[in-house]
Length: 405
Image (tube, rainbow, N blue to C red; front, side, top):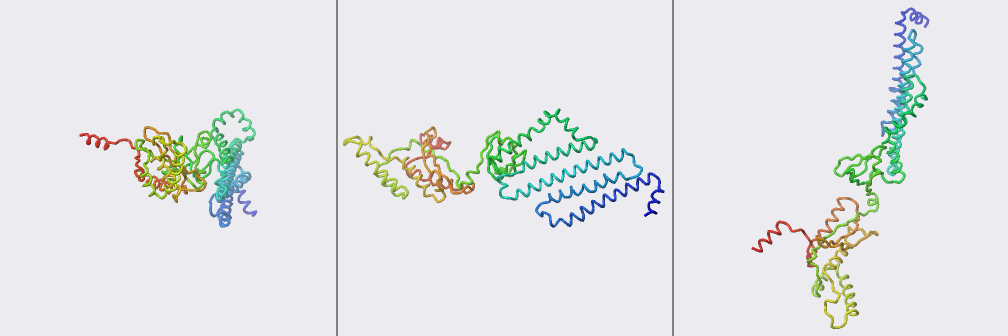
């Protein structure tokens, strides 16, 4: 050892500095190799195999050790200028700050990933809050980094922040708005990952696939992605279909437009003929008894038939549609509203609206059930001597002109 020391002392000044720098670099590389290639690889089987975030966090943290070796080792290298030592020390300390900050950021990302594996994460996502903490960590690291590089106290930089508060508020305006919106969305349970939402102002109609601090990602049904600023979900109106999904039933609210010129009273022979419909028999019997009692009580002998109550084809169709939906196996009967009602007549006929709920919320099945109901009702309308209203087409005009000629 004394021989090595003596040989080293006999070298020129520049050679002593070079040898010292090479030895310091070798020591830093050795520490880095042992930590990352030996210790971390040995610990890899015991780390979370479902994510590489914890590995990256550990790798950033392991980078601190060789940087510390350089930071303290540079002080013992002989014959170096003080300015060189100061620069190397400041740069390595700045890199240590970066490494620690990145390790914390990766660790926060891993914590959020672990939380998202829990069932309650769909109802209470924390990604927005994690991103806010990351921003705070990175901002704090930036202040410390600058203070280390200029060799000044961080308090000196913080004291100057008061003068640029307005600028910071302007720069972080969206972040502040998004933070407030995230708190409102989460605390009031307004939005969850997996919810189907509709937001016409943003042309969004699909499932929420990601909720973060600044943006909400919605995958539309055409597989496009709409990115919505988080604060817009509080300031603008949007529709969440979660209640429909959880209820187990989806509403049908559609109308048949009946030609008003085809509405009339039914004759006794027609009423008797309509008894062939099994679904109408209870209605026809109850209605005929009700009308007979009313006419007997309210109409004096000799009054004209026009003053009597009679069944109408539109009323009988309405009763048939209601009975048909009541007995339909795909229409839910679990406390949902079921009715057939007339809306206000207009230029396009008399709307006969069907209001009920299917026993499924799946879109393709729902559309199939709705189409099945209206296929049947559209085809059954002529049995009541009614017509579905339709705007005249070119064929109608052509047929009319042909008949006139």
